[in-house]
Amino acid sequence: MAPKKAKKRAPVRAKRARRPSKRAARTPLYLSDEMRRSTSYEEVLLNRILSKGRPNETPECAMLFSSVLSSLTPAMRNLYYKSGISAGRLLYRIYQREKRYTWYEESVADLVGFFEKAGFSRVSYSVLPERISIKFHNCGRSEIGLNVHTFEAGIISGFLTAGKGQHVPVEEISCSGNGSEYCYFTSAPAPMQFKARDADLLSGLTEKVKAEAESHGDRSQRFAEEYYLLGSSSFTRDDYSREMNSVICHMGSMIGSSLGLDAARLKRSGRQLETLFPLLNLCDMRVKSTNPFACEMQFSALKAKKEFVDISISFLNGLLKEYAAERKIMRSSIARRDGTYVVRISEMNGKGKNKR
Image 1 (spheres, rainbow, N blue to C red):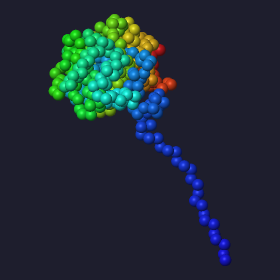
Image 2 (image 1 turned 135 degrees about the vertical axis):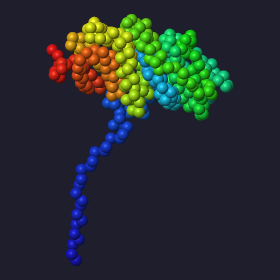
Image 3 (image 1 turned 180 degrees about the vertical axis):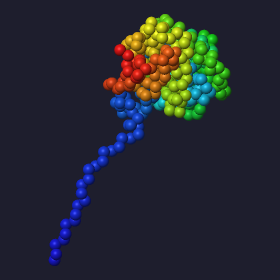
Image 4 (image 1 turned 90 degrees about the vertical axis):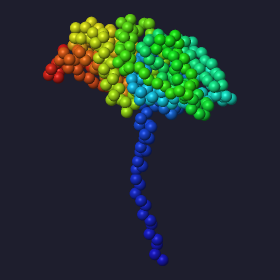
């Protein structure tokens, strides 16, 4: 009997490395450890606010800057409100991991505690069978003719909606940004209305920023930086990024004109520029030289995202609009250093070489 032929073994092929998931590809390097325990960037920010340690602080002017930019059109204002709803739902789920509420009204005290950790002080609330109301008694006196806490109304709505199991609309009835002594939120069936004019909003914000910049931001109330980033997520979305960069560039040109940042003034206003960018919580600005002009923008780990870098560069382009119009040519470079972005901008001569 003829011996059986041995079966040929298929050649061993090297295993392909597993392709990283889309979520892993989108995960910023500086958040990779926290992302393993969290499901989103928003959850990382919420957990940091709720942590026992004192969060990083950001000026009130930066909060106002974010609110106005997110409220310039009805569509953007609606997106701002929905971003708050999403954050409020997530916040309720985070609390629910450790607590079990018998009635959803019991959770309102935790919601108030969250706002106090975010930087709002003297927060009070009332719970009635048909209505829940929350008041911020001390959240700044920046009157610009607009109810600026659309994002906060969304957070309250999302939090109560998650607890009740059905949609709970919330509206800001009165606001310190619109002449009231306090900000008053209430669950109401009526939809929000947007009546403010864009030009008036931008002018009011420009005056506020100018006053704070000239006083070096010493009078500004402080909020948690993570809360600012949470609210700013609406105007860093891809579908609004191009429009938002144009708006921020225009805002920069208005502030630059108000501060008088022309070629002569710029040489004496390096400290003002260094104050302005942290005041709006855009980045840390270091003016290396004013003749020729050279600066360096540094972005912390939480802000080391392309969207925040683009916004800051657009704002600087607007600030230096009159200066650049005097035939100055700027050159920029971006580098990544230990999970942060460093942007260097320097003045060049007409032949494309850096000035000495």
